[in-house]
Amino acid sequence: MLRCLDWSAVVAAKTSNSPCVVVHGQRVVSRSVAAMSYGVQVGMRRRHAQGLCPDLEIATHQPDRDRRAFNTVVRTVNELVPLIEVSEPGVIVFATRGPSRYFGGDEPMADKIVQALHSSIVADSQFGIGIADSRLAAHIAAHISAQSTAKNTAKAKTPFIVKPDQTKVWLAQQSVRVLSEFANISSETVSLLERLGLNTLQDVCKLGESVLAGRFGELGVELHRLARGDEQHPLAAVAPPPEHLCSRTFEEPITDQQTLLNNVQIMAEEFSDYFVKHGAICVRLILKFESETGAHSERLWYRPQGLTARAIAESAKWQIESWSHKSALVRVQLIADEVRTDTARQLKLWGGVTQIDETATRAIGRLTELLGSTAVQLVKWQGGRDLQDNFQLVSASHFQSRHNELNASVVKPKWRGSLPTPSPSVVYSEPLLVQVVDKDKNLLRVSARHELSAEPAQIIISRQNYKIISWAGPWPIEEKWWDTARSRRLVRLQVVIEKFLSDDSRQVQALLVALEHGEWSIAAIYG
Image 1 (cartoon, helix red, strand yellow):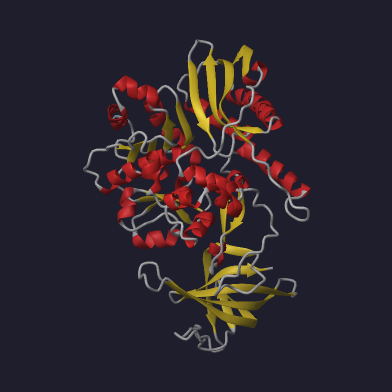
Image 2 (image 1 turned 180 degrees about the vertical axis):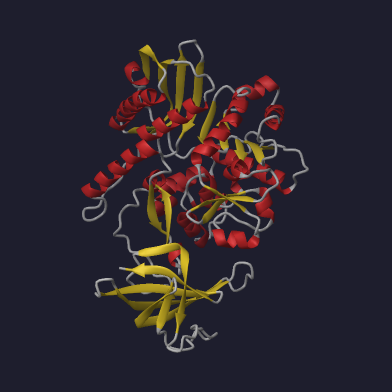
């Protein structure tokens, strides 16, 4: 397995030595090695990152840009390894048995790949190669290899190889947190395992599969499989689909990309429906394209939750865009390489997922097919005292893969120090600076005991004065006081202002204002 650390930031950075971060939803999702040296971390707020590094380059999250840039790496590796699997930009999985025999072992094969990548555009990026007997172990090994290179840039890029038949012993020493980082297990589940005293994968194995199944259900069986180094799901014995579902030959060569993708979409729907009828899902697929000149493109695609018709269509689009051969295509093939049993989902007698939820899910799926997996986003609650931390935008396809978290009836825990209900209807990503003054036109202050210097009388917005007819608060926030770089102190105040419109009518509006670093700003609007 090959893994490139923070690939989005590597692509977005102007130079290899410039500090750069990729921001999505006002949060850092990727940062360069230079930005890391300033203390910038993934998940950090944009303003906090800029405070640590004033010269920081800010780039928006663009998955299409990352995929296009990663195609060069894919083609380089594909010249040495015949069949590779690309699940996301920055990660390549491939079987090493055949190439290792050809090059004389795992280490010579890895060295050959490293030499080839040095001549590509990622020569200055931090990438690592991990070789192991299981997918999870290979993920961890590649990450260790990439991190060791990032810590010592002068050191040559060396692979991390887990000895054959030692994967289970090596995995047993790993922390359970690797399950959320590399195996798509939710962080809530991992946190619960740690609270139960299961800190390593060896502890999970010792507990027993039946005990985990009794506590977590099907997820417990999956946790035990991962901890002992097996695949996440058992294979299913299903007859391969008929030839007409897996292959399509065009009488007239197709040159238009959208026409080709429409045909792949139809094939993918029939292909997926076949496995659904047999109670199975295809998790690994070989996608082949053949041109009229005899050239062909072959790539392996993997999704642990199953390759849906939408996922197959997106994979086909990525593969076509990365193929340098631009002649007309005459044939498409879908080959199921790995099929697993589709675990059933027990619905509740009352509540739970309804027909409206299913209709909304299909509508979201259709929009995702048209616009892409990252273009359609949903709001997910994550908790917090600050309004901008309560919710985050996540990809709709990722949101749906988490067992349909669309059910809004789940009661969310109350955070200590958060604002009372109801919640504001509009929350500013960049607060609007204002002035809150008392009756003597003095700027309102808040003492160390969170006491107001006077009663708020007016608020000045863009040099216009508005009378405050009612107010409530203040509600203070003091966080991370032990860390001088991340500490935060602010006070929030609810105010109701009176406006007079051009027709002399009176309008009342409720605002949430905040005082931070000596400046008042409008954080949100009610109603």
